[in-house]
Length: 80
Length: 183
Image (tube, rainbow over all chains, first blue to last red; front, side):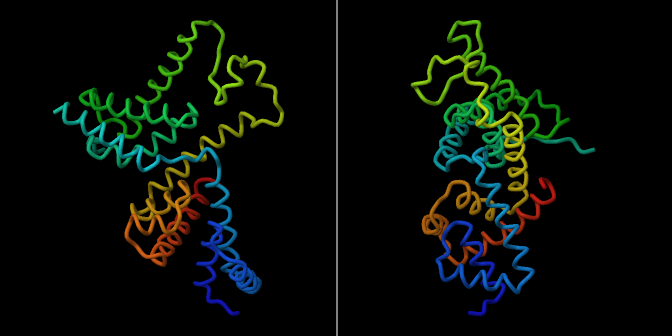
């Protein structure tokens, strides 16, 4: 039942990706009742997740990047 | 002040995400954005000798990209051969609707939201830039591309607990960085 802070943070990280199970979440919340540092970490972590969920935050697919790289390398070779 | 030097070999690695993010908020189409980014790199390569080293490479590339985006909008407008301002919509059934008919939707996102989102994307990108390369890579795959834990582990050949440690460090750094730059 009693968690170490390190474990609590690990569960909190997992929870950000919906990968923590019910029991872990219960134990985490019990830990958060008495641990101020972890409360702080949890709230920051949640905020970050919310920001990243923003639909305007985009990154390129790995495959697209490779394609881009290949095309560019060709161009680079031509250039020299 | 030392002059900035230019090294096209590093461009893709360093700037493609940044430029892509910048483009996607302006054209709203992944494929067009990718094409524009590619055009930008090629154009940058061709006019490399014009680079005076007064601005950083990234700023210079962005200034090329801006032109490319403007050109893109000019092209799709002249394709239609009409004087009215039209935009292309994502769904086919709405095609041909006038822009004016679509503006006054109170439940839609406001202009401020959009601006804020654009800036948020940039802020996040700046913070990602500051992370060590491996952390940034894992964090992006997990958070932005929503890969499964297992898939990332297989691809990068790391264990799950290794991954969570990297994620934890990346999240801590990101949270601190965003706190400073955003909130």
